[in-house]
Image (cartoon, rainbow, N blue to C red; front, side):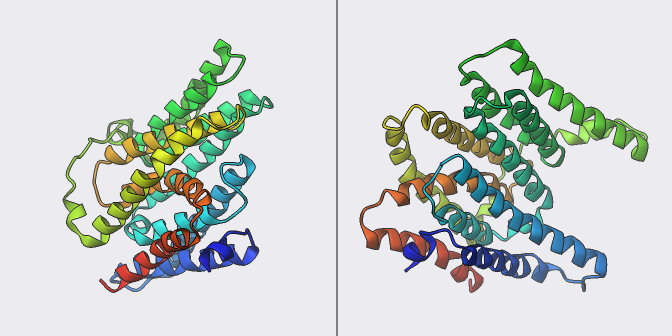
Length: 307
């Protein structure tokens, strides 16, 4: 049932995903607000609901444009379900903002396999990554996949390696100017670089531990398949497949470096994980097993509502 319904890309699928994210935000974030929402808070909440919905459209565009998966909506289904399984993500707006900016950067990285507008794509990616760091500092590690993508270009020159620094400096100067006008201080730079916490006590909560365990299980199950599959990919497909694995590894480090472990940091892993798990599901021959995997992903957030 789920495999046939979400195995094709139809507008109704995205209507469902949008409604699910709306309900996930309401029951995951708004129900925890003790005081009644005023008009400004309501507008802010609507913005972040729209922001999360924009993320699923952006992710779908990326996987389609770069042929990271077949033409289905499994990736968006997984992304949406993993997101609402961890409603704590909706409470950390900086992580929400940073992740979508990193998705915008990844869109440009994946398109670097084409020879068109290389300099513009590198600049765009560096700008988006730096904007993401303004909300979550460790997003700066995303420059590693960017430099990897540059190294994959058949013709490399020193100018391509300078462009990311130009993008970073541009956003940094703009941010510094803003803080000087508003706060008349450079202290924001000290606060910008957070400490690294390895306190995982928040994961003692079953509502965080269970989703984390399920995502880890999916990763352990699907990753070896993806690693083996890379060898059989065409020369055109291989760079983006390797880029996706590097991105996943970097996103795991970004999540690990989170200054405060709340479970929201797992949002960094969800997008690349969803693509890799989709690649695995697409190649599963046993229909019942494939159906069971999708039902597991769909039912977990529902079960967590009653725990």
